[in-house]
Image 1 (cartoon, helix red, strand yellow):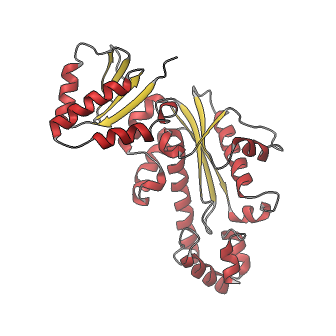
Image 2 (cartoon, one colour):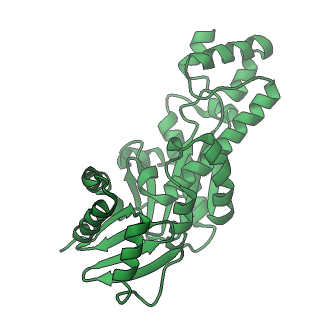
Image 3 (cartoon, helix red, strand yellow):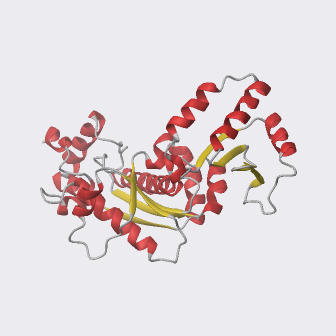
Length: 310
């Protein structure tokens, strides 16, 4: 059975004009949102978006994409052969996650001494892909906090989502040898996904979670849960592959940063992210000024930072 493939790249204005001319009489009657055209080329569906991105989907997508990439090189003089090879290697798994309607979840704050754990599940319909691409949506770890603040409100307004926030006071109360960080993450992901799925009758093809451990262990963490979301596709670097996970990553980051800002204003001092030396210094100042009980409310006490300031 031949496997469907998907390849995409950004085109120059010169190539955009050539594509429009070439596919003039091959265009489909219906055009996807934010697209200039969608056309059929033998076993490949070609979509050119207003953003300048061209997408090839189908059994022969790699062949057609290579042909037009070579034409791009001829027009612009840019050496893109390495880019072609890289796209094929890195996006090999993207066919199953990107150009689909999906539900995906992601978390922020699990590696930060200060600030809550924030988990968001989002639903992205195919029709929202161009909207998100035009915003520049990708893994929130790869874009600046300034851009997070700019695009997150737009995503929140348009993309259905559910966010679960676990404060550090709650975290310290439940963390134990039996309930470790991965179990907490599994419980929060499951709760966010279940809540979102039951909000509406979403038409989705796949549920995607960034894999933080193997599926068997993930579901084992949920053995005491009353409701469990199953049929999840676990994949590493899911934020890069799946737009619903990327949206969840950005929304979670946005909420997390706002919580850190609130904490900074409350304490009257800069609250750093992560768990490095500057965090140790800040934690010691807070302990000396407010006492260890304050840290129980705002920090994850099982982190090694706590030992360093005792």
